[in-house]
Length: 481
Ligand code: FAD
Ligand code: AMP
Image (cartoon, rainbow, N blue to C red; front, side, top):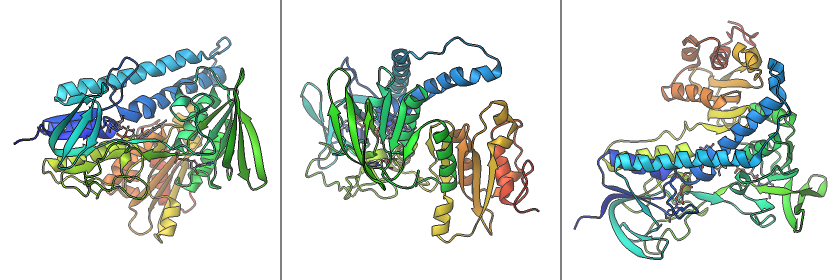
């Protein structure tokens, strides 16, 4: 007897919906199960990324950046405004509109590609059967030749600061504030903490970021992290490193607040906030997802175990995105989705896990690809370094946006580019150009020989590549050639 579907995908986030679309494009009869409903009980597609992650956070980052420009920078250009004010509910409504538009777009793509969306909670049973329980409690069992699990992740909660959905919130709650908190605490100076802290700090909150580790952004090249920290401190983010949060006490009432206890090298400390955002990372979400006899194994941290091709230990069952190992990034999951669909179609698809760009959308952005200098040192690789500051890039100066630098690392002997790290304007897009070149095994010389448009921010990438071999033009070189 043939299965109900060729492919069933559980989860319609950026990993799952992309896998479903690609599978349908390849001719498979594909269904995608999603449990998320909006307030009107309508199915919500797009997962964390589109609804409470990448997109809404960027909408608020963009709104708050415009506010900063209007308030502090328009005057430099001779543009006069009256008093600049922020209407938070309007800003939040705009964000919601953006989310709706993007998430609704996935429904259109499903239709165009003939993916069947199924509303309900999916549970993997044995033999590639999937039970779907809809929100009215009815359930059905579907069969598939291939199952792709893309159930995503949820914020980690910590016992010292349990969220109450009002004063102490997670990243989702921090996208919903209806007014600017006067005193805002952020636990965790990771990607999400810095982005959300930046949004509210720009709008006027006094933001204190409490971070347990002594190193700022330990996963980022440390020269770039140091530069980024200087810039963020200049923007009035109070980043306390080596500050481990140990407890919190809520004060309810007319003006609610929270007293947060933390330990640093001087001892026990306490600080009071009007709102506290807990951003200490995310964990894979597998609640109710796997029946006891489905056979799929998880690792000790709760991630579904997969090989390099995202195949679980059960034939025909794959898992992708945040629910498996690797960086919790939307584009990582999407690429895994494409790879798995193509493998199911018998193609020789593979993914280059060494070249996944990562970006922190502060202003300026912090973006990385490949190895950091610290990693190359630890691996004993001999390397060359080229750096170039945005201060020497005409377009950046013209835009009054010249903080930061590009750093490129290349193999000392072969000149092959091994990493590129940027803190600066449009770093996300700039690092992508280097990612593309690295995918084709570029050398620093190749990038140096490429013609770059002038004036453009990308000239900083060109000059950093030239600097690797000591012949940057618009800056004195450490090593002359
Ligand atoms: P998810 O997006 O979490 O989607 C999983 C989906 O599966 C959900 O819709 C869930 O409802 C559904 N589901 C789960 N279990 C079941 C079940 N049993 N049955 C049916 N449905 C189920 N990443 C970036 O790359 N760039 C960024 O700028 C960025 N910014 C972020 C900002 C914030 C504030 C946050 C929180 C995250 C951000 N991320 C960013 C991370 C990114 O959102 C995630 O990496 C990405 O969403 C993971 O995709 P996914 O498809 O694996 O999981
Ligand atoms: P990320 O995983 O990038 O989202 O970053 C989360 C950050 O939260 C990490 O840098 C952790 O060190 C930090 N963190 C986790 N628990 C605590 C805690 N109790 N107090 C302060 N920082 C914490």
